[in-house]
Structures are given as structure tokens and as C-alpha cells.
Image (cartoon, rainbow, N blue to C red; front, top):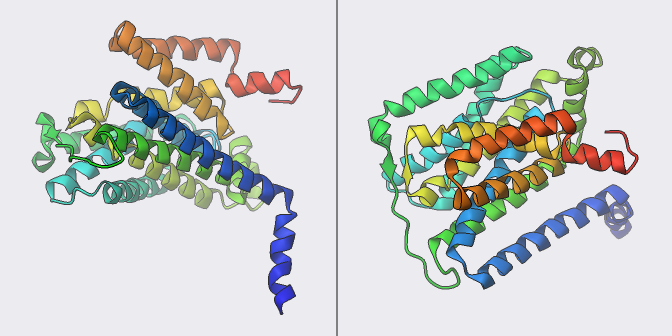
Length: 331
């Protein structure tokens, strides 16, 4: 009896894929903890503040890649899911529920349901028709929020950060720790999807959806899962934003920069893999933060456009594609 219980665990321990996954998750946990401790030791308010934005884009880019990279469905409505997450926080704050973990979970749930509904209504469309439908969703939601007085409407809403004591130096550091954890979790989730049957099914859809359907792949069900997971992650990325900015308005929450960066970062880093969006977000996000301080924040979208054009011309497979070619592997 004991051998029947132990044998599967011993077999699992000899499984190279399982052992590799464990090493990956342990590595992510170690890197996450190391980054937090290093930043805490430096103790720079600006470092936490600027790094928050970069890590926020890691979550957004990873979430976009789950549908856009793995399945090949380009989503123009990233800002809508991000804004829904932010305004879920505003709603709970005004209802007297100022628990940030609960706000993040609620934002993920609401945005995930929105992704599921959007997918059910639009995933029968393909190509540009699906992309246009997601853009229309963003416009519709922005109109609703702008006219919702309880959430501030077009005037916006203010959020007061709570006081902190103990280990954390300020609430900005708390927000940095939260978004760092969300970034690590989103990367782990993306890798799980990539190496799972869901990831293989999404890859089949991306390569040839008609052939995948003919082979028995449940294409609609897999795409609905992808839109739900992608939307939930985007909403969770937006949930801490009201506490970060202390003010939210529809024009900023539904800002073009979120939609553009969510697409540009995976394209620059490389699609079809969990690492590409991380590389793209870290590089492009850091460049934008430096440009904001040294030149002007108004140049951020210009920098994104120029880098995106350069990569589409010189390296259409992104940085990961360049690394694969150098390593002699097909992209």
C-alpha cells in the first residue's frame, strides 16, 4: 500500500518536464524575492514608483500574449480590461471595502467575466473583424464609465492611500510588492499555459484554425479560456492603479498607451513564448520611464511607435526570434 502511494511521486520526480517546471517556479520565486529585498534595501521612493509602471506592463504584455501570441487573436481592447480593473477598485472603495487583496481578486473576476462575455460574442469573428470588435468594446465601456456618476463620471475619482507601519517604508512600496507578485504570478501562469494542452491547442488555432477544428480541437472553448484568463490578468493589473495614482478618470484609465504598449511589448520581445513579453516590457517600459524623466512623457508613444516599426522591419520575430536564429534554431 505504501509503495502504491510513493511510486507515483518517485516517477514524478524522475520526470524531466516536471523537474524543469519546479526549477522554473523556484527560480521565479528566488528572483522575485531578490528584487524586492534589493529594492527595499535601496529604499528609494522613486525607484518603487517607476518600477511599478514597468512591472504593470509585464502583467499587461503577458496577458495580451496569452490571446494575441498563443492563439493569434489581436486584441485592441486591452485598455478596457485594465480600466475595468481600476474602476472595480474605485467601486469597492466607495462602498467602504478598502481591502486591496479583495479588490484585486474582484477586479480579476469582473474582468475575467467580461473577457468570457466578449469572447462568446466576438470569437466567431476572425482577423480584423475580431480586433475591431474589441476596440468597440473599449469605446462602449468608456462611455458607460464616463456617465456613471457614482464612480466619478468624467470628473474622476480620488483615492486616499492608507497609512502603513512596520516592515514597509510607505504604501508605494506596498504597491510595488503587490505588482511584483502579480508579475511573477502572470509569468508562471503563462508558462503553465504554454506547456499545457491548452497552449498546444492555442498554437494549433494560431497556425491554422480550420485544420485544428477538422482535427477535433475544441477551438471555441480554448479561445474562451484564453480570453477569460487574459482579461482577468489585465483587470488585476489595473486594480492597484487607483492607489498608485490616487486619482482615476476615464481618459487616463482607458488611455491609448495601455492598448499600444500591451501589443507592442510582446511584438518587440517576441510572441509565442512567455519570455518575449517580459523582455519587451522590461526594455520598453524602462526606456519610457527614462524618457519621462529626461525628456518628456509626451514622447512615450512616439518611442513605442519608432521601436515597433524598427523591429517589424529588422526583426519581425522580435528579440526572441533573433536569439533563436543566433542559436541555430528555427523561429
